[in-house]
Image (cartoon, rainbow, N blue to C red; front, side, top):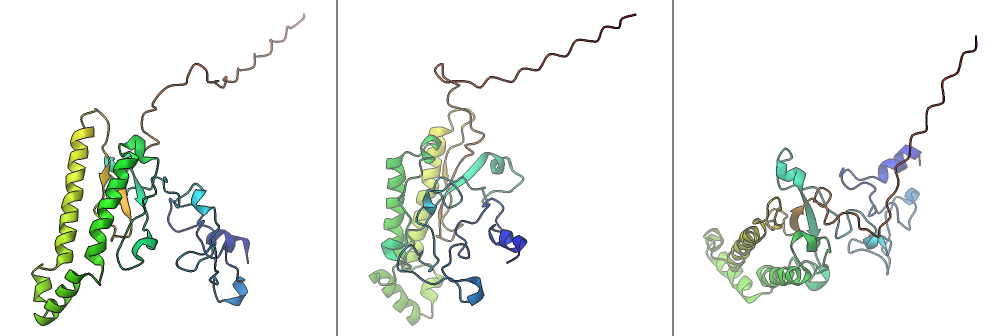
Length: 248
């Protein structure tokens, strides 16, 4: 394979991702010449059958739970775009599979200085999962009833918004807005501090839970260099050589 082609494959089209550690071509156990793709292994394979390294979750990058992504939910020319970042909570497919969207309760430690401690984060995930599971579960009694009534009424039952899933999701969106308002009242009292914000699940298609936080790279440092910490000395400029003395 040419060198430029291999370099192109190792980078994703997303500018913020950099080297794509989840690229299946990098860790496939089938050669490129076979043209079959990555084979499914009994271990170290993702839900899509892609071969991945066991320690990829620990590497710093877009797959890391604490990685601050660019904010795609605000205009790129706004001040909020430059001052905020997004922490993405990924789906947990082990709870309900693809029957209902559920999110992982793996706590990103970067949320602690942003104003969301670990107990509050777990309460948020527990609240969302408990509402989403019965709302999307096709074997839920209310969902089966709505499907039968919708069929009998020519789907007018769905058009009028009488289904249980719509009422549950509307209530969940109202809860998210209320949580954002309470955080704004609690944290915005301090000057120059942006409160965390839960992005609507409808904007992400229920695929991720996006949490907006202040950009940690431009946030003020909590403390200056301590007395016991060593500081790197600045290099001193070399003295200029003496001017030559002219002898008559």
